Image (cartoon, rainbow, N blue to C red):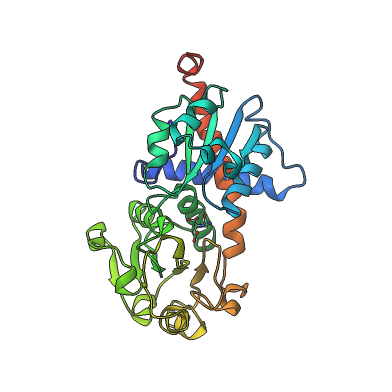
Length: 316
Ligand code: NCD
């Protein structure tokens, strides 16, 4: 087992063996989470601070639960009520919190690159819980674990990632991870929601759902990220659903045992039909949420082990 990272800022800097180490550990935490006694004391005595500068349901709740189940003292800052509102910069806020000696800082921020910048200014381990359109590493890892458990492997699968690719950090982290683990990645969506030059990432690009989904093992749907759009990227939601919304008919060209995923929050009737999302024979959306806690426990655990290997730096 090797995991040499000081921070978890993105999938880009992870080696395939580090991804496997993390997923193997997360599998063990998934078992713990299904038992009655869910507590481990592995982070006992450590302090975890969550700073979410953007709305979040799943990610924030699961990081909080993950830290608590491992015995850390967890504080979730209400960033809307913090001094950021009084004009304090991100870095000043981080330095203030850093002076309180946290061991783990979990950060979500609307600006791409903000979490990397912050990691350079503090002397604790930093986890990126999503930065702008850039990366969302724990989402890609929880998706990978969900795929591995459903398909029995995480290589040589055909994965179709569909919808608003251009604004999605989930798509970016997922394609980096799936590519590193030697899967075939297809991006499916309208040209207006496809980032320029994306073919250079070694992916196949489709603008038609039937072509993109044909014989896929995994169909991953994405939300239309309206908060990141500064104009009209689609004609209308109805039209979008008609062409790109996942329903039984569009799914029928994928492999008969293809699984359906969505990171949430879902917009039913826009990118996905409600009956597909709720179909327990196809949809693994609830498993994704379950694996989210396990993957975040594994990430916090591995980062904390690396902290202990650097005691002088921490107490400096
Ligand atoms: C995603 C995010 O915040 O990037 N959600 C999540 O973390 N589960 C995707 C989204 O907001 O659509």
